[in-house]
Length: 102
Image 1: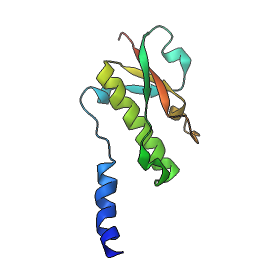
Image 2: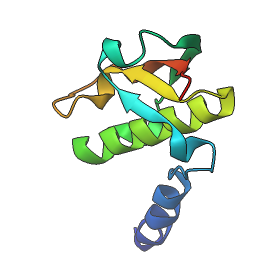
Image 3: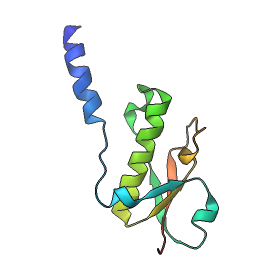
C-alpha cells in the first residue's frame, strides 16, 4: 500500500498535457458563429484514460488542453467543442478543428 502513495503522483504527472507554441494560440469555443467563415481541418478528441480518476473541473481543463494541442498539430486556430461550455458535464470530448484567417 505505501508504494501506491509513491506511484500515484508519478502517474498523475504522466497524465498532464503541456501547451506548445502552436497550441497556445488555439481558441476552444462552443459558438458556431465564431468559426462560420473558417476552413474545417478535421476532428480531434480530448479523451484521456485519467478522466475517471479526476474531478470534473480538472477533467474539463484537461480536455480543453488536449483539444488545443491536437488542433495545433493540425495547424488549426480554433476548435468547436461542447467542452468549451462552462456547464459542460461530459461525456463529449471531441471537437472540430478550423483554421481561421486573422
